[in-house]
Image (cartoon, rainbow, N blue to C red; front, side):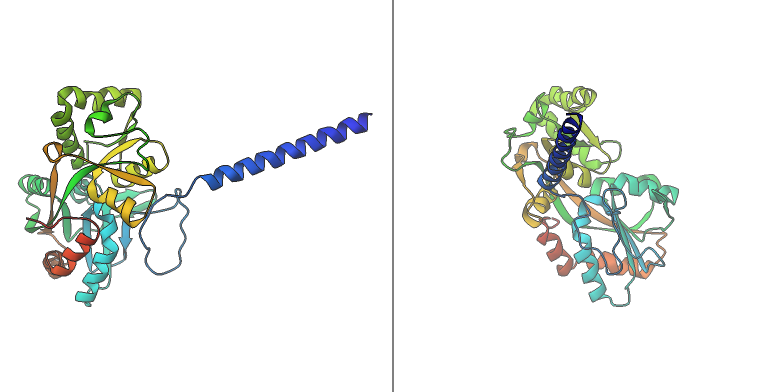
Length: 316
């Protein structure tokens, strides 16, 4: 009888393990992989283990580059095509390094001279810096960094939601609801946050802005991102946030280019903001001729066509 009970217990334990393993596999299979970097990598040995070892916002040749560009991070999707086209137009430049981090972080990197990402230390100085027009103008007044500037694209705001819009988000005002989890750029280093907050005030006054940016931050239903162009789409895709105000091109990229299960909720013009992006050539550019050539290229029909491909509007 004792042996019979042991056999039954062993059988039950085995069945439980098989069931647990099947449940784990089903759970894994049911959760698609939406992790960045979302763009084609350069040629060479590929070794990346997201989310632990995946560098999404450093692009190209970090050793002895002939051109270094610091892009406002929300243009990460453009960089691959843009750099390839620039190399084709200027075959004398084949080693290009680019960063696509929040412009406030890039400005701190220029000021301090160093960026540390994990165990990687980068002390490269940029030839070109791109950001919103207002940010470039402020930095010029504060530091007099730039020798020349050029506007090259525009971009309005939109709201990114999961496919089917399960929370029935109709506009910015709905982001103040207690049942809506919001992914919001941090105003400390993301210029987009200030423009979204202007939209909140236009849609619902100071009360709406306070609800989203104070009350809901305190109760955890508003999440402040560190890198909004990576975190906000991923949080919506993984079901951690219900809505994320983003630049319209970020929603366009996720929905139309990657075909991820998301939707875009338009923000009416009266509550929206349109950013103008400006490229600036640094006075201290390590590669002054390359910087001049790239600044001119950013205004070319080829570069403009690439930006249009990813949903950006032309500059006025």
